[in-house]
Image 1 (cartoon, helix red, strand yellow):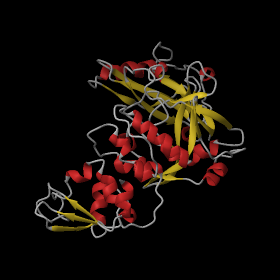
Image 2 (cartoon, helix red, strand yellow):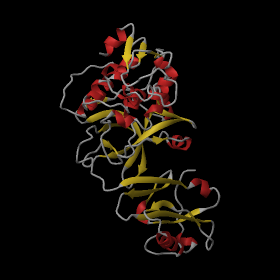
Image 3 (cartoon, one colour):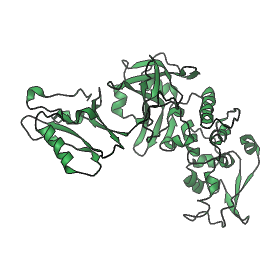
Image 4 (tube, helix red, strand yellow):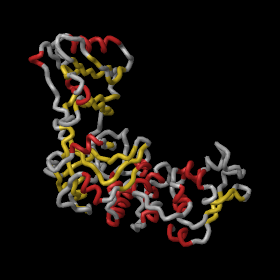
Length: 406
């Protein structure tokens, strides 16, 4: 069908829920039309050389090119694309155009995108989300764009497969993703014996990636991808967190379903000593062995200690100790799991310039009811010098300096 629209001279779009032609008015029926929310109409909007919109009474609303600014606001599709200019958009960017669209059948969320990515595959109704996995397989046969892995579904903070199982998973940040040339990627992360392709095997997706330990206790690794995110603060390379699948040597799963934006300090920490490996990335998002059903949702707070070290402060305690993980080059990570009944927990790092001296203390996190007693107990734990709830120090001999990289 995409080819039919692409080869047409003009496509007429009849919007039966638009009763007037006042499209430019904020909150107009045109802006709220269901036509912009359906999965199959995406190709009708993009593929033709010219699109003309008509209202319910067949009054002429305008053309796609003439209303490109309004349609960009409605759909978040780049204006150059709507003008019909030759624009190269990343896989993640194109996926984001479909992220908020709906289809009657789950399989059509994938089948309606085949033309957009120039692929063909059998339409098998009854396979549900597996159709979208198959679509990504076909895309990978024709493209080595890493942004296909750059989907962000933060509310799904559990281990899973490498591939998204719905276009909706590209809705949060994928609209800002741009592809990075592989040559630049190789130089940026000092990748030796580089190999740009990634291939599908019966053991997972085989790909060569630099891996840097992120959390030794959890055996989690940070793997940068050959793509970046454009934000108002600049363009940042993107990484994903991988964890070894239990019982394997080099098969990894997505440890968390969110993206990591890499700062200049993060980039500097990658060097010739960084491990670059051929790894196998697990695909199946439905494997119960991998997707351990979570009881809580995870929230991580990263504490970078090097700026405080530069000012003469040393970390002398964290509380509660079981919620904190020391990172090799970052500092400390506080993990809080929300959703537990009557959850009342905060994180408390304590710093001092010399002992005895007043502590510099921060409270991170939340309590369900905001009860001060929980804050007080943690304060005493850290300042009291050796209670069971906090890792504390009562003398200079017991100070612990973190090994954060400056």
